[in-house]
Length: 253
Image (tube, rainbow, N blue to C red; front, side, top):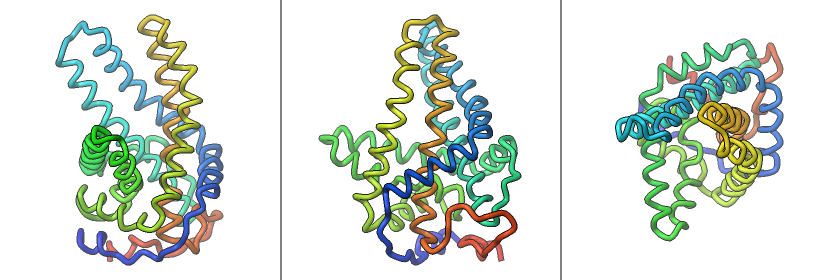
């Protein structure tokens, strides 16, 4: 099953970075309420742990716990957002609640966390090597989380699959990553500045709001990239009551 996911043929098309950003914005607006609830649930807990570590009152244990919770929480949220878009993509189903999506992502949390850790370590080491290798790896593994959530295989398979999907479109994917990073950075900056001058509760509110408002757009953009290259002849979101056989349906046969 893992080999089947990794070696699947990918039709070569040229990715339109502007179209990706526009479609991600449409998804962001359409799913705003559920994304807000999901982000508040995940980042609310995550930022409480971060604040405990930031205060230094519980020492190294809190720092390590903060890192673990940050990776797991972010992976869970990304997987949940990918799951909601999957329903819209396959048959126009818009019924999955925030809790349902997070529960489904929780079923693959181990693989999602493994992918996040491997990608984070690889990109981090790449940035230590004069930055450029980190940018290259971040681009090649950009859709590893959607792959981990939607296809079979291991975490390493998801990273290989991401590279295969994006081959030939690395520059366009980098443009998407750069634009998303710039936009979300500009949105989160005021919250960071305000939170830095507040007490623990004020910092928690500011940090959570900043993450809740920006993380969904990033997740949607990468999910759009995935579908745009996997099924270039199909819209990312189907109108309700329409349906086609998706690329992973035959894996359950």
